Length: 493
Ligand code: CS2
Image (tube, rainbow, N blue to C red; front, side, top):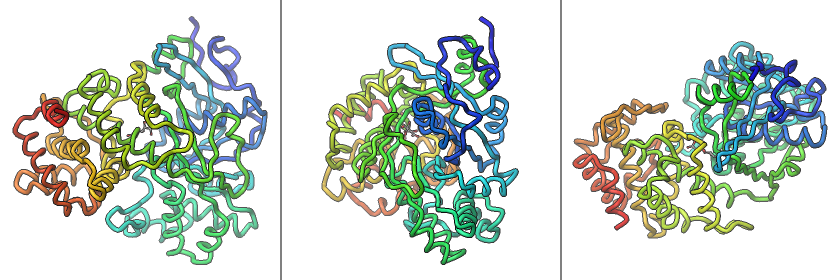
């Protein structure tokens, strides 16, 4: 098969099996500016938007990506050489693979090279929404104080350099200031991260920042900018060399395709400052209160991932589907979901939680989505407080079971100390707090609660004696046996 390098000129020469954008990309305006163009944005918001553009031929909702980090340079280059086109590779559990070229992204600005261009783009009258996928850790939220981390060096830098910011809140502030002086309406700020009340959290963090710089602007933002909360969902593993090669075998040379499952869900509070795409036509669900949906998703799916990720890494599993193919891990996950996560969830309108959990396990077991545990465990220090620790705290308050989640915390300590699985294979641990976690975990040999004393991660959990009693025992056994499976079994006996 001839191999076609993906770009605007070659679209019509791509193999027939590949679905293409049917709209005129040259006519699109960038109504959305998105900060954090990784796999997830491309398989989710850009996918929903592309479908809408295909259906409605609206011209207002193209997307301009913005990268704030040096790591985005590669992304910028890959996308630019393909006219910002990329292939979505949807992998179904029956082995079917569907390819679609997504055309919704029409531009990309690397803010570290050109901060004014990024600010101008957000301040442009065409921009109606600035959306974010900046990960759980990207909000400068300090768990210990429950407040914005004003002392962070990036924050201090942006407070001192309002026109040359580095971090997301510096950019948003500069752009909103510009719009306000130009008499333009505010844009909506739409978080697409896995955080409960992600819109409220973004608002709180942004206002804490702006108040330090310009109290008047903070008032204007409070009145004019909407921050819809949303639940976002689509499992999107990291794109691998094999994915690129497989696509090349299917006839397309694409430097940065995105692989995902077929399932996707987006539940959004209908609160927008300046209009929005009619995403309901492409499956998004608009509601007045997203809280029960996001709590359900974070405490079952994301926490379920972390349970498998940490226990599975120690055991030597590589991927999520590998974990759930192991009956011990599949039952452990279900027990965690049924006994610890479900009791602290509110009912969700229109959703049967038993079906939701069955579907989750089916999704996790998709053998074609090779979701590596290293991705799941990436930045655990910012994920676990949001995904798992809140469930432990609520169960402690209600007298509910905590053992299944507690073993995960003990496993995390062991994992952070050893840096290897139980057979000695080195683990690929990426975490902004890696060193602190390692040090605290190593100290647990002399002070068994040392790991839990990382207040930024665990808050006051170390003061809960019913938790620490179980935790200490589990950690001791894990160090003695280096056998996570036996411990999982004994908890389920
Ligand atoms: C995962 C999520 O990061 C994680 O640990 O649980 O990326 C998960 O795959 C997505 O939230 C699915 O929507």
